[in-house]
Amino acid sequence: MRPVTTPLPLPAHPASPLVPLLLTAECRLEPRELVLHYRLRGDARLLRWPAPGSTGRADGLWQHTCFEAFIATEGATGYHELNFSPAGQWAHYAFHAPRERAPDPLLAAPPLIDRIDQPDGVDLIAVIERRTLPPGPWRLGLTAVLEDTHGRLAHCALNHPRDKPDFHDPAGWTLHLPAA
Image 1 (tube, helix red, strand yellow):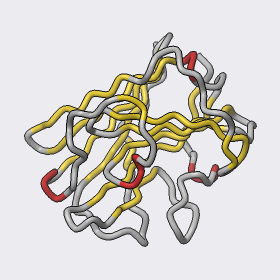
Image 2: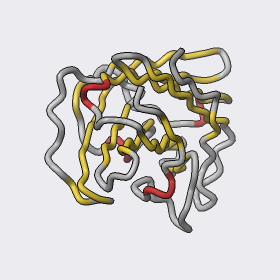
Image 3: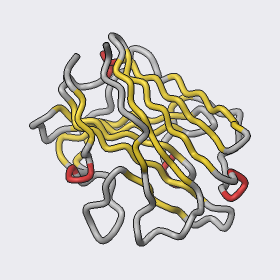
Image 4: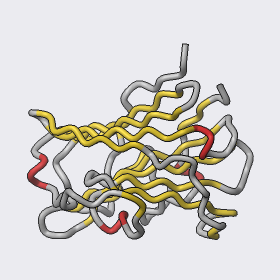
């Protein structure tokens, strides 16, 4: 049996603008993949969504509606940041320490991203090959940036350890997954 998390709430940071939507995330660890499932419930028309059409690697995705994961090996200072745009674009960065960039990882395969419009919201599923990630066991920070129709950004995460949103703070990476 593979570790599966139950839906975990990703509340907006208290300093973020109010977005009356419910965001949760789940992880599933498969033999060759890490599957992240983000569920946004409520009126999705309250958000500004990236235009569909562009896929592939892209920078600056966090400046608009974007789902993210921060993944570190337990006890390590280095980590990986993955960004998933609902339009299909993605980014994968490596860091030696908080906000200290390392060379970007060479990926065997890009993540698979699937946006599913639901009657009561939007789901985003991202599938990442485990061989592109550091070895486990892992600490994960599951996060999202939600841009409202006025261009304001809400920063959502499992945990907000600071007065200002900071997804790179390891204190916010509170989900633990085993190596296998």
